[in-house]
Image (cartoon, rainbow, N blue to C red):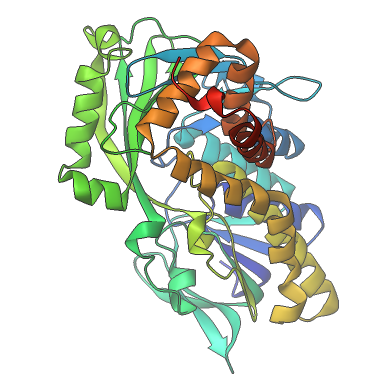
Length: 412
């Protein structure tokens, strides 16, 4: 492993690989350091929404070439605490909406190899321990392969090393408060009956809202099944994640009857969700943060792949500018934060407000009922979650209806 690079990227998940791919494609000397060795798993719902698909296609990933390990989904099904559901294909701009489900053990390696094929130096089985500082400016990283520790000099460092980011910690960013953290738990099940080409989401328990359970198809009669919940609701529920998942699997009326012959594959695995409500700084002298390390998980759905890709690419572009100017100051790198906020900031802010509305079991039940009655409402409601429509329009529509058609919000 060389002792220096123009840019060191810590973490080869979607954010880090997107940054390294962009940098290497432009001819930069970039080192992509990954703690594990591929193939390696990553706890996730495995859903790739439409706005993520477009970026992955630009990186050269063709889901049709994933050797049958990618499942195309064309719509979704959403359930309320009452047990009522609606199904729809998301309303989308011309060209339609395309979503996929791909296990992260497959997706992340494909992304890392895409960066490597573009010219990035991929170093596996090595962990970044901390950043190296010179007069308050990041000038490299210290890392270990488990047997020895070494320093890597860099003009700048991109921290894409996840929710427990060593880069973020070494920059003085502490643990996120409870209100900005969610938790998820997922397992794989075989023998699942009546799987459709849908992303299924069920707000099944009014006591843990806006938490929900999901069923995502990953193969023939095989599904990724899990639950996501905010830390505060989890504490107030006085239950463990595994107990909530067991309840979802055994009691949700739209799920339980389809699992009578199902069997779990391995053990369910949990992970933290650092949501964007934290407003964590992402630009420093000599360093950038992106993806989960920057706390950019969607507050409404818990999805983090799209914001990881967006912020990874904006970090890559900012790094290119810094290398070209031979200036990795905070001022030069601030273009990173401006770019990802321009692309994803409104989406995340609207997600925070919609998440707060989803705490109401009554409102969720009303949304599902109205969507069952009207295909237009159903399609748009799904589009706001799957990244095919502007969420801010949804909020404006809610406000206008509350002002001019309040009867819309009364139970029929």
